[in-house]
Length: 158
Image (cartoon, rainbow, N blue to C red; front, top):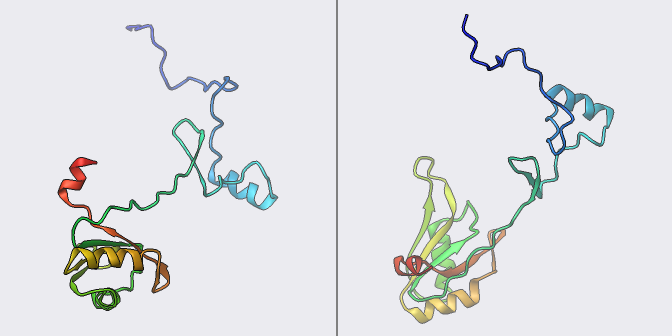
């Protein structure tokens, strides 16, 4: 029989009480029992916090949409209702200026809207006016985010 100097993992005990060691996560049944007992220590973390790999809670960072300067007639329209259609956008932006094209971006397989679109105005001045008038305006129950669309040149510079 050959002895390598290592212990097998099978008979090893887990060390508990180590300083700085994270508490083991409660099992499903422990959480169910704690729920019905009304235990305060088994409460799940708040939605604004997430647990990292080491068990420390991290503050959830909310991302604000990036407003891009209008350098072309093409506009980005974000926070769009999933029920919005291209004709709805066409009519909304036609009130500001002449629209060349409106395109709602949809998921490749489900054909459901992804919640953003691109609208192309005829002139740069109309695009700037559309951003001034329609940014943060409520449309179909949501506040729109209207800004200049990123072009490949803008992405490389960032």
